[in-house]
Length: 153
Image 1 (cartoon, rainbow, N blue to C red):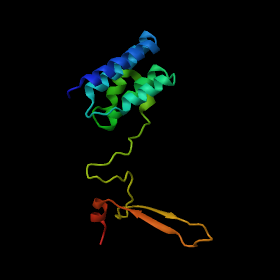
Image 2 (cartoon, one colour):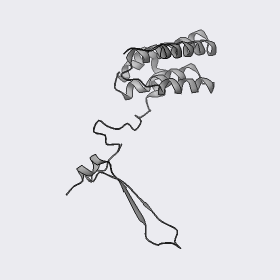
Image 3 (tube, helix red, strand yellow):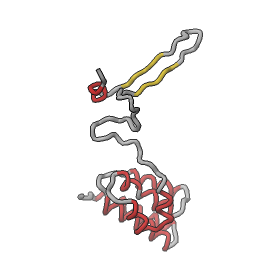
Image 4 (cartoon, helix red, strand yellow):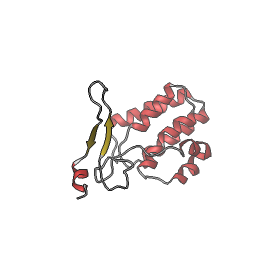
């Protein structure tokens, strides 16, 4: 993956900020996590860098900053979780092990994260209006074109 000049400048600023914020040993952990993300990333995703920068602003420790950089690699299945434990230790691995994958649309463009087993693909909710207006609930159903095409029957 080719990196442009702006990305390299942002990387350089991030590293300088880490060096200025943490002790040398702690900075080294965050810098190694940053380098690992840059090396292993499957796709361009600035979310990890933004989260790490925010944690630095909030005076988080270097372990939290390192842990913020690594989850996208797991979510994109670029690495195996054991690789984080091996390279960054059990403290960093434990701090991200309970993070679930964010809701990412699947390859078939179906954005439902946990669909029901009833084979009826749609997002549904009921709204109960003010009693003075109506006593009947209003049901809303939302479907993508793909969902509508999978509708039974």
